[in-house]
Image (cartoon, rainbow, N blue to C red; front, top):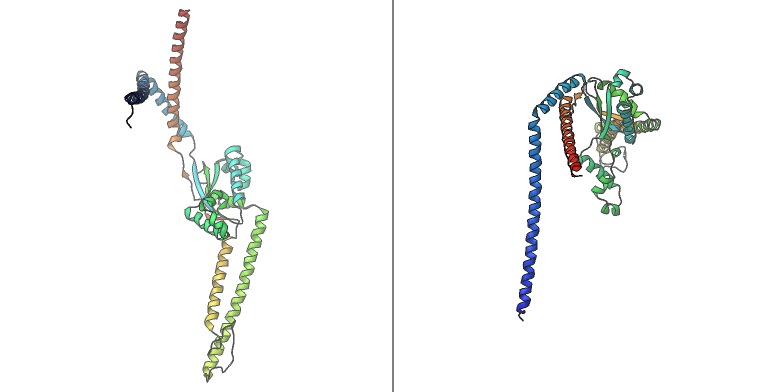
Length: 360
C-alpha cells in the first residue's frame, strides 16, 4: 500500500534537515581544524620573527656556551666501561645481585671509596675512580626455551596442558638465570684487570654456600673414585679373560663347552668364555661418566665462575649529547629565550595596567 503524500513529504523534509545538520557539523569541524593550523603557523612565524630580530644575541649566547663548554669538557675526566661475564652456582644469583647493588651504592651514591677499597682490595685512590656497578642476565631466546623445556619436563600431564610458555616467562626474574654480565664504570681506563679476582671473591663470600660447594665437590670426588675402582676391576677382568683366551687358543678348542666358563651379568656366549665386547662397552661408559664428573668439578668448583674477565683497558662511553659543549650552548639559548619572554610579558602587563586605569 502506498504511503500518503503528506507522509512522504514529511520524511523528505526530515532527511533534508538531517543532511543539513551533518553538513554543518563537518563545516564546523573543518573550520576548527583550519583555525588550529592557522594559529600554529602564526606561532611559528612569531618565533621566526623573534629569532631574526634578536639573532645576534642568540649567536653570542651560543658562541659563549661553546667556549665555556669546551673548557668544561677539557677539564672533565672521560668515563670508561668494561664488562665481565659470570656464571652463578648453588643458587647464588640473588646474593650476587645484592652485592653488586651494594658496591654500586658505595661507588655511585655514598662515594665511600674507603669501604669500597677494603672490599675490592685496591688502593683508595683506585676505588675513588669507580663511578658505578651494574648487572643484568646475559641470555637469549634459545636459553629461555631450554629452561622452559627442562621445567616443563618436571610437570604432570594436567599442568602441562594448561601451563604455557608465556606463563613461564612471566614468572622469570633476573635470578632465574645462571649467566650474567657485570659492568663497571670508572674514570681510570686501566683499573679493570685489578678487579677480576677481588670482585669474584667479594661476590662469593657466603659461609653457607661455601659449605654447600665443599660438600658438592667432595661427593663428586667420591663418585669419581667409585667409578675409577669399577673401571680398574673391569680392566683386570678383561686382562684375565684375554689371558685365558690366549691359553685356550694355544691348547686349541676341541669342542664347545670345554675349558672354564665365566659369566658377566647374564652374558654367556656359546663358544666364548666371556663376551669381551660387553666389558669394553662398560669401560667406555665409565670413562664417559668420569669425564663428565671432571667437567662438573671444573664448573662447580667456585660459587661464581668467570666466563670472561675484564679486558686490559676500558672503552670510552662518553656520549656527544652529554658533552658540555653541546649542553651549555642550549642552556644559554634557553635562558636568553626565557629572558625575552619575561621581558615581553612585562611589557604586555604594563600595557594592560595602563588600559585598566585609563578605563577607570
